[in-house]
Length: 161
Image (cartoon, rainbow, N blue to C red):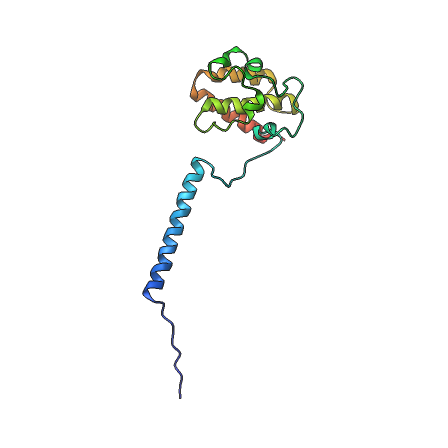
């Protein structure tokens, strides 16, 4: 007597369910990836190097004496910033901002404030304090200039050690 082995053939419903699961999971991954590039979600990591705005807003290190935490952006960068920012906006508040995605001036003041702090506190930082102040004022002329300069400051801030 020979025994024949039966191969179990998946039912149509099992095949459909597994196919549907694969399609939906791939679509969810595609949607998640698209949204990730637009705006970070709830679970994400941020760069917290020693020179980033997040580092300075976290108060993990004493601020340079030339620009204490309570210094206002207008006192540090000059009267031209009155056009774009509150007169009582402090450097600490500027480094803690999170509106740079939709507001190029917000990104400029955030990254520019961190760059100024780095120019005083970090030896070898690519900008001198007077350069940061000058570039900040120059970038206030348009949203495009603000976004471009914020990107340059951000690159310097994230490359700093």
